[in-house]
Length: 105
Image (cartoon, rainbow, N blue to C red; front, top):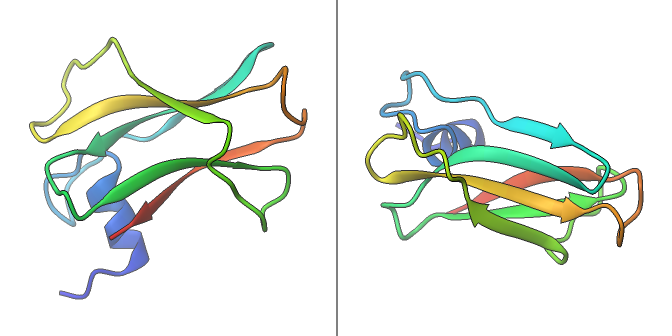
């Protein structure tokens, strides 16, 4: 099976146990102080890199200023994965920002 970019993201983010398995959707939250994205990320494959990136448009992205912490809620997270929260501080960044996860292998 060829690992397309869509399958790579499904493998790395969401906790799917197979290419056809169910995965957990990411959750994005915007409040007065930050923009955050919560996702279940695979941690048992050292060839994967999952990085949070922010940008003011959809053509230019940077990981500078994006932080990551483990969620205190690890309920129902599959073995070999962890729920992470990626965020960007709105006070020190442009107000119209986007936040995404970049997955490479």
